[in-house]
Structure formats: structure tokens, C-alpha cells
Amino acid sequence: MKHKKYSIVMMLPIIAAVMTACSGDNLEADVVSGDHLAAGTVINVSGEASKDHVIPVEANCAWTVTTDVNWITITQPAAGRGSGSQNILFDVAASTIPTTQTGTITIKTGDGIERIVTVNQRPGAIVVVPSPASMFFIYEGGTQTLEVYSNSQWTATSSIDWLTINDGQSVNGEGDQQLTIRAKENTNSDAIIGAITLTDVDHKAAPVTVYVQVGGRTPKLQLTPANEVSAAGGIASFGVISNFYWQATVTSLSPEGEWNWTRFVDNDQLAMYGSPNSEPVDATMEFDPNPSLEERVVTIVVWTDSPIGNNVNQTIQIKQRGATMPVVYLPHTTNIKMDEATLTFSATSEALPITACGVLYAEDPHMVDQGSRAVGTLNGEEATVTIPNLHSGTTYYVKAFATTAVGTSYSETMSFTTRLTPGRGDNQTP
Image (cartoon, rainbow, N blue to C red; front, side, top):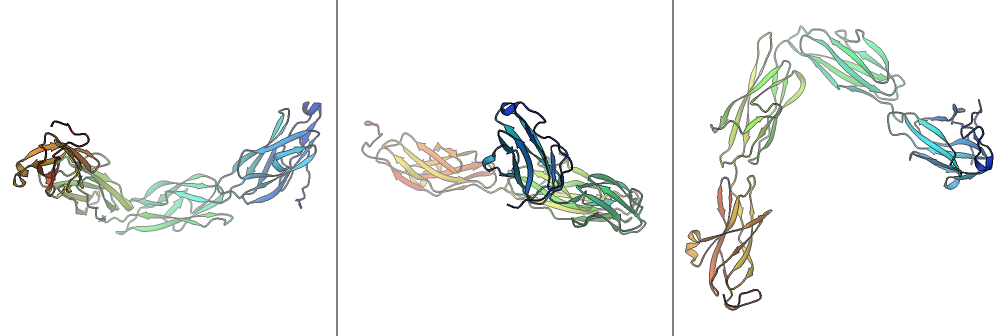
């Protein structure tokens, strides 16, 4: 195996200058990085994959070498066991994180004396990340903070004279920093847009653009439609874009009556306030389950709140579907005796919980609706019911039912006949 050549600048002990381990003999080592002699016990490597980094070990006894990270691989000695004077070789995998990462290599004698080599790997990828990704000012302009997260040197440059960075058109930075972004007042009716460009000085990362908008002096308002809400209840959101502060208020609920079945999520009220933004701001409402077959509608008015007048408003409606009746399927028998029968059936409800279920039964097929009732037990969508005190050898007509807040639904009618003579599980004298 061909190894890199290293120039030795200084000899610094890593394991020990003088040790009494290994029967009182010395264990020493010099640490060499891929580029230079490391400062004592530290090796610095690049963020790229690299091979055959060397740690010379001078010893007269057996020792082991281990690492605590998976991006370092000990390639020599095999199985991590060495003896006497020998080079330790290790490979480093490419870094996948944008920050420096650190691992250790531990050389240890059989008597438990050890020394640790620290390996620092530089970032594997250069990043320059702004927060927020875009900025918005009202027409008056002002200042905001732009945070830059980076692991490199970078520059920030403004594209236009009304937009400054730390009171200048450009700044040089390194690592994580906060910038003061100042926008001058917009005297136009419409919005104006500028940009701040963040550039890695070594051009190892693509430039990042932060768009900065200053709203116009004429109030603008744009709404995006809300989703329809199911009868089971849930969340509905509509987007609001405005260059001024705005308010959304519920003005009517249909059908009229209770006003407590919907509310804005952010404050549990029927009104909310929003801030100006160049991107949609979600106004989110929560809806309770609809216990009626009738559709419900909430009407909301949204208007701008501009101190310089000419405010505008728009109306939006959100619909909540009405509940549907439960669906009940034809029952079938699972066990028939002389004096009782067990039946099962399926019952489903789209939105509202089933509060009661069971069967109606009678000996006369025309009297089932006025017949006797047996209550069932529901497990998910499957119901089980046992009908007691039946007559032997008799035909009974049955229909299943299920009840929710909006009403009761019934299945088609089926029939079964009780046993005439005793079978397994029957009372011998019913």
C-alpha cells in the first residue's frame, strides 16, 4: 500500500511520554494528519472522503485501537489490534453535514493505559441560509432583522438604493450573523420589490436571493377560497393577502340559531386580526360536527385597516355539509336455538356516532315495525344482538336498526326459524 509522505514539524507524545504499563516500558506515538504534523493529539481533515491517514505508534507491547464514530474506519492494524512499533492507518468518509464534526481514535494498552486522538472533519457542504426567506414591509418601510446561517464566509448585497443592509449596500460576513435590513417609505400606489443576494465567497454554494417587498399606499386585498367541511366537523382555511393590517369577522350563520359551532382557531372567537404580507396568511376556522341533515354556512367579511383610507373588503363563505342517515345492512343469523337466536349485521355512519342499534322482530311479517325490540352491541361497524324468549319451531321476521343524532335507519327484512327439537346448547325443556 502506498502512503502519503508527511513532513514532521515537531514530535509530541500522544500516548505517554513515559509510562509504566507494558511491564514498565514506554509507549509513545507521533500524530500526523493528511497535511501536517498535528498539534499534539489533534488531526484535522477535509470534508471530502480521504484515505490512509497515519498515526505512528512506538511501543514494546500489544495495544488496541478503536473509534467512536462510523465515518472513521481503522484499516490497519487488522481487527484493531497491534503490537510494538506500527503505523495506524484510517480512512475518513465524506461529510454529509454543513458543520464541523468530531470523532476520536483511542489507543489502549492491555493494562488499561490509553491516549485519545481527536479527529476534526471540516464541513462536507457549504451552506448560506437566510431566515426569513423573503421579507415584507408596509408602505412606511422600516427595519427588520435577517438572520444568516452559514458555515463559510459570505457577502450580502442589495439590488436597489432604497434597500440597505446595516445602513450600506453590501456587507461581508462569516458564519451565523444577524443583519439589519432597512427599507425606505414607498410613495407609489403599488408595491415595489427589491432583493438581497447572499453569496459564498468561494462560490462553493449557489447564491441565495431574499426578495424584499414594500407594499403600496393603495389598500389591496386578495382571498383564496376555503375548503368545504364534512358533517363530521374539522378545519377550513382561506388565504388572505393584504398590504395593510386586516380583520376577518363572522357576520352570519345559516341556519340561524346557535353561534357556537364554529370559531377561528387562533383565538377561539368569531373574529381575527391579520398582518400585512406578500404571501397568503391562513385564516383557519374549526367546525363542530353537524347534527342536522341541513347544510350549514358561515359568512365572513374581511376588510383592510389602512390609516390613510380607501379601505376595501371582501366576503367569503364556508359550507359544512349536512349529516347523512346511517346505513344498515341485512342481518344474518350466527346461532339459532329453540328459544333464542343470535344475529349480526353491519351499520355505518359517515359523520355522526351511532348511539343505539339492535333489531325489531315479530312472527307476523306485516308487524315487524311494531314488534319487539332487542338491543345490540356495536364493535366498530359490526353489531351483535341476541333475541331471547322465542318459541320453538317458529318463524320470525327481523329488521336491523341503527340510530344517530339525525335519526334511525332500518335494514330490509329477513326471517329465520327456531329449532323444533333441542340441539347443542339448547335447554332440553324450553
